[in-house]
Structures are given as structure tokens and as C-alpha cells.
Length: 319
Image (cartoon, rainbow, N blue to C red; front, side, top):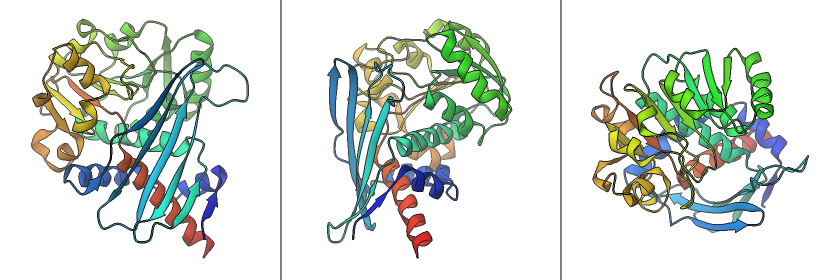
């Protein structure tokens, strides 16, 4: 029988799940060639602007395969309407039987994305975070900060947003969690004072320029998940000592690495998969002076790992 799981049940199940090691394991399996992930399906809308991603795949020899549908309509400003939505569908890898419909409303995508940011920082960010910088004052900008604190100790944060109202709301939400928040409307100020920066916006033009990024900085860029989006100047990647991607194949078609290759700033030989960085200490940050970039476009193995964990937790609870 197919189980229909509500957002409330999903959030309750997540209380007992640490997604960071799950996402790590998924990236390693992916880089070992143990995961089948077909090309991303997507639809791009112009009026209102938005995009829908269909990501799907399976881990060889596993119990399930997963199909995830996630949308983001960033031009909507009507109260009560979420900017993102979606669901994850879990099927038996043995019979094709639908096992669960996870009506997560985009929440599991947010969780697995935030966990991926933490994984990238765990292996690439400087050990001492002077100040963390967040470009994007939305839901993901909040979650990236919370998950980053699971792998690095820090309190000082500078956040950039589109307007002061959203920045004030961000500060009001995050300061009670123990962060000291400074806000800015100039992304260059983030680069000037932060040595770990996370970009999580739907920008289509670079927010940061190469000359603004200091030596010793780590950047995790995750907003550029379609061909049209871009958050970083290609010359940032050209200057970087290490460029790490979640998926080599996807980075040839979307993301900051794709845009930098299009501009002739880098070649694909510069790219290393995050799963390999996790498994090989020699591929990680080697000194405090390096500039490192993690270009995360979002891989279906993340959806597989998080949806499996939630479904198994719910099965235990129901039994």
C-alpha cells in the first residue's frame, strides 16, 4: 500500500535524522559509480518567473528508486503562497510498486541542500571562520547558516539581501539562535570581511567579482541550478586553487563551472567531484591561503538519501 506522508509527519521524522552523514554517503556512492542518475528534467517559466526540476535515480542494489519534483516561483509576492513547493515519490526497486508519496512542499529539498552545503564546508572551508557570509536572505539562506554551524564554530555573520525589510526579518529570526548578524545591500562587503561565503539566490548575473574575494576564502555556490542562473564571476573560479562540484556531468550543463567554462575561464579538467574529496584527504583544502569553490547544482542521490531516511523512520514509528 502506498503511504501518503504530510509535511508535519516529515518534519517530525527529521527530528531523529542527521542528514549530513547521509548526504556524505550519497556523494561517495555517486563518485564511485554506484548511483544511476539520468539527466535533470526541467521546465523554465517566464510569467511569472520560475522553474521546475525533476530529479530521479537509484543506488544500485538499494531497496528504492526516487523521483523528486521541486519548483521555485521567485516572482510571487502574494502572502501565504510559498516560493517553493514539491514532492518526493518513493518506489520499490524490486517491483516498481509505489511505496510513499512525501508531500514535503520543498522542505526535503531545502534540508538536503543545506546538508550538502555543510558537507562541502566540512572538507573545504578554513578551520577558523572569521565571519560567515550569506548571499540570499530567504529560507535557504537561513538553513545554510544553521547547517554550517554544525561543522564549524562561529558566531559573526554578514548577510546580503535584496532589501532592508527582508534583511531585518532575517536578523530577527537568526539572532535568537546565537548569531551576531550584520546586514548589507552590497555583496562586495560580504567578500571583504568573510572567509566562508555561501551563495543561495536565483541570480542570473554575478553577485561577486574576482577582485573582491580574498585569499583564504571558501565559497559554496548553490543557487545556479539552471543554465540561466549565475552568482559568481567566472574569474573567481579561474583564480581558485580548488573547484569542487557535486556532479561532473551536471556541471557541464549548468552551474558556476558551466558558466566559467562557457567564458573560457576554466576547463573541465579543473573540476573534482565532492564524493572524491570526501574519500581522498589529498583533495581537500591544503592551506589557509587557498581559495576554494564548491559548485553545487543538486544531485538526485541527495533526494534518494533524505527520502529513504524519512520513509524508514516513519515505518518504524507506525510499527
